[in-house]
Length: 347
Image 1 (cartoon, rainbow, N blue to C red):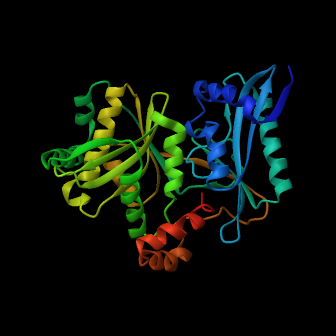
Image 2: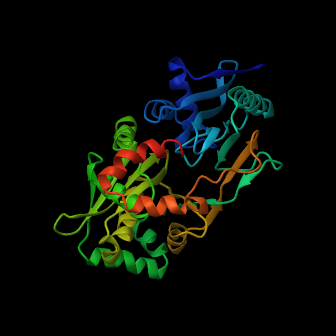
Image 3: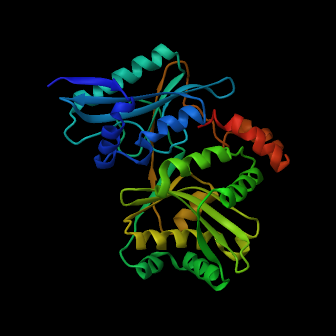
């Protein structure tokens, strides 16, 4: 039974997505819709590869080329996604994975990239490849009963959730991204980071429908305080982008927001709360640990072609300190206009 490596085209989409939804190694970020999003919103070339045996898809590998004078030239699975790499069926066989990796390596060399990156959620595939040790993810079971989830939150963090409830905060499911984007863009500016475009978030909502949800927390008078855009995949909820008003901290709106998301996900029948990727030693890392989540190292692997080491295109890199300080001083409108042109190359 021979393996064929093919490139995703419109006639394969239904089979690709059916495989992704059934494959235990696959994630929300392996869905075919990311190809069009990465192509049209960020204008990056994509190469969605799959291995086929006897007309059946047995493994997939979504890739995109990111080419920037400032941040380098890479082939990545997948930019703007925290998980990627090869997702293979249990019976795929080593030959299918090996052929996909050979195809990715040949493509990387043909494109002349500096490195090839696999953002694995699961096990390390190549012990001899350099790895990025900066990131971890936080995933935890959602218990069947709402109150059991509340009691599973460590005492001090649970007190913050109850503070938000006591302050009369209210959660809403928004039909659009307007309130979310206002909070998100202002939040990232205060941290000195360029914002993704509103067009991107609108595309996510339009593309994934009910599987892309915006939850916004307001005070009793309806003033937006905190918002999160989440993805739903199989029995998991993934809060992915978020933003807070400066008043959110004193009112415990951020804690209340994630509790409301967990509560609603529990009532929806979800079984896993994926708190997402954080950098070790940062505020978000500590916040998630305080919720009782344990960090899980992410197996980001790199094949280096024209680099001496793993790229460090993140705010922790000291060489970006001056840029971050300057960015914080920009007017919000200017930052929102310029930011998407910069951040599209960071991925």
